[in-house]
Length: 105
Image (cartoon, rainbow, N blue to C red):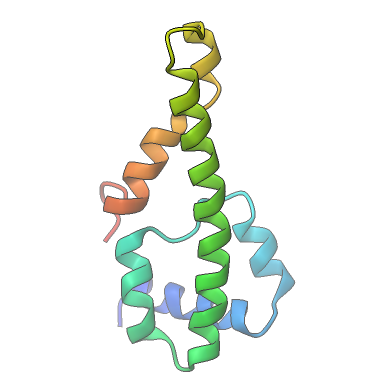
């Protein structure tokens, strides 16, 4: 079993058990990317664990969606380029969520 598989299983199980440390550790992150999220059901021992992971993922995606909406809004010609700099990183974050980061499998 790969380190990645063990780490994903441990994370999902910790979230399902209500481990506040895991939620705190995930708070500043963007959560799992789509490729890893799609693989999580195969690695999860119980359905409740996966439901908790989905809940956390939905929260993260809602924040990303808001950031993308704000970025799009500031791309309007009436805004200065500096206005969109605040949310500029959200495009890279969205692409990384869909495709995963380079070097992460």
